[in-house]
Amino acid sequence: MIAWFNSLPPTAQMTLFSVLKIVCVLAVLMPMIAYSTLAERKISAWIQDRHGPNRVGPAGIWQPIVDGVKSFLKEDFTPSHVRKAYFWLAPMISMIPALLTIAIIPFGSQLGSQKMVIADLNVGILYTFGIVSLGVYGIVLAGYASNNKYSFLGGIRSSAQMISYEIAMGMSVVALFMVAGSLRLSDLISYQTHCWFIFKQPLAFIIFMISAFAETNRLPFDLPESEQELVGGYHTEYSSMKFALFFMAEYANMIAASAMMVTLFLGGWTLPFGGLDQPAQSIGMGLAQIGIFIAKIVLLMTIFIWVRWMWPRFRYDQLMDLGWRRFIPLSLANILITAVVLWAIA
Image (cartoon, rainbow, N blue to C red):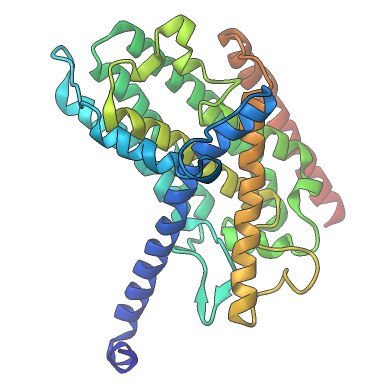
């Protein structure tokens, strides 16, 4: 096998390595999505002083698997009045952008000679925001295809919300690239080996994190599916696995947003001690750095879940006011201050 691999041209070897990395990333990402639902139910139960899932397996550990099987076996009902082609397409469009975003995030330094990133683009952040912006189409299309005014209103709300906070989110990271001098995410991680950006740019981190809640439609910003106002929002007419795909997309987007925050503000796979802020010199250290990256994601996912069960929902006018009249001016001010400081020390 090794001799056959060595006989391949370099381009074929790179392709095989890329495919292997994609398979490994999906093998970790999909269980993380599934068990994020269990973590949400366990943490919410702990906050509300009640029992969470505890019947299926030890401490309810097999509950996500049972939920997945149930989603596949439930009746897949498609109402007669919907626009069927778009109705089927919308859940897939919601899921795909989150998976594509993971492709450019460095989840470790290296194993052997292989960098632990699927595609190390020199304009990685531009790719990220370009892909993330596509996620809104799945939700809008779901509302439109449902041929239901309440679902359509949920989709329109989502588009307005995501566009508003995407502007603030994008502007919040401009200061980081002004300081680091690169759009490549691996370069940003290298720059943070001595001091993470959360300490150098705390305002940018706060804006980015709150905007991530709005981008992923999480409480206190889940207005697109506000049940008491819109029946169930953009997914009212969906059932079975198509309904489950929207929730899988939500958790996939949460993981992608957490991975972006880890990369941009928390030093990525680095820790400032034990040589863990340098490229791995052994397989063991490389695996340890991947574990550090996943642990940081789990920490941010816990914050996502905690906020949902501790904060009340915003009104829609408060949501838009925060995005347009608070975050965008603050992001512009942060860019200006950063530019002045860089000019002063140049």
